[in-house]
Image (cartoon, rainbow, N blue to C red; front, side, top):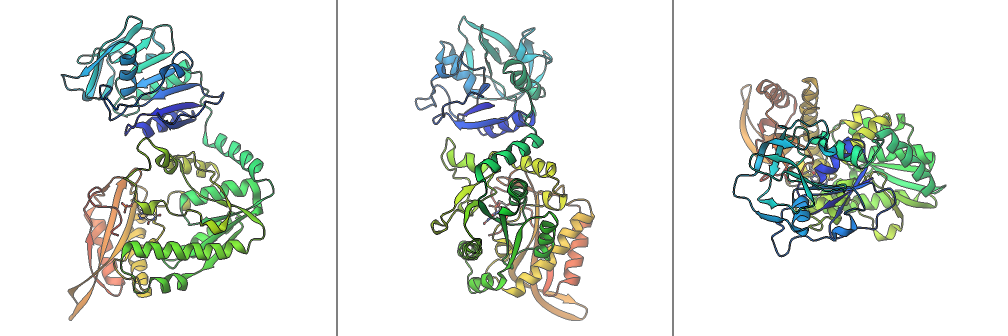
Length: 506
Ligand code: XMP
């Protein structure tokens, strides 16, 4: 495997994803919390950083732990750090070093640049630049404005580049990473979804033996893939629980339950609609709604888990970004809202936790799901918040409002599917607004509610832009909702991006 040392760059996760796209397994560690390396570490990548090496409080590491011991690829800050620590000079750059640039020199026969044209486009993003390098460094690439675009410490496998190979604007970035991984580190590019499935199933069997495990299914991708993996590993010892909180999309409970049964899962559906709705009566504040739903969920789940004799483990669909966030350079990131850390184990359950997906990124979870034979019905689903439609009904939640929103949402989503747009949109949903407005239907004046349509493009939900859905599709959806959903006489479309808005309205 490859280790990526994170100096706090916004691109660190992207480096990891690129490495994995090349079918090489890698792990990210913050520069100030590096574990002892196991014997299978084949190389180390240093990330960029928002810091300048010239700052007093800039991140520091002990280079002797890596240099000459492992192949090293240092990117941006990492490159400047090595140069500065070894007697080179790093200064604030005088010319613009952001955005596209073209190489104008590449050292012939250098392993790192194998197959890369000497005028290849690269992506720069730094305020500092390396002005001089020590004698024992060899210059291996330049651009017009950045002489030291890349160097190698002579007679070692330590390479450094000031541009960002992980960004797609560095057109040969993937080639460069592959050169490092394969030619320099000797990695075998065997880390595929199939290989992951095989080794994970074996590891789960070893870890869980004959123990019983409970898992809460949500209908989403992560918990579904986790369930199938565990099912393949331990069969009927996996007890899945799927709770109907009454806040799911129209007919979703039945459809998803059916799908899971079809997959052979040992699953129990629990109808707890009334328990949730009664606890939501009179609650208007979004955070209080979330808390109430979280609390009831734990109660229901705990009741069910207790019915499974001698259960020892709780399985969760936690994925790698959640793990990295909690140990990142910045500490648990302020950018993640508390509500995303859903779940959590109530003390009284006293179960050990098993998280088979906690090394995977979201797109990898989908690939693993495909390799496990999960259908698009589950894999291609849009993300859906744990509190469900409750946070898409602004203000108090009632059974009537849920029913109205389910109808409107179903019309919206079905139209997106029919128009071939569902898979192009990252997340879509309808929102029930707590305002009434005047309308006219036939000869009658109406005074009814408003449905807002939301559709966003995003990679991970952290930032998002509203989708420019075609007008004719929006027209059709609006017509159908107003004509078919009693209680709605107006439909609007949300054209806000995140930030400053959020994807959900509550
Ligand atoms: P926001 O509204 O913060 O949403 O832009 C970002 C992503 O997170 C989902 N979301 C939630 N997921 N529990 C969840 O499990 C929640 O309370 C919650 N709130 C928002 C949201 O649907 C979007 O995908």
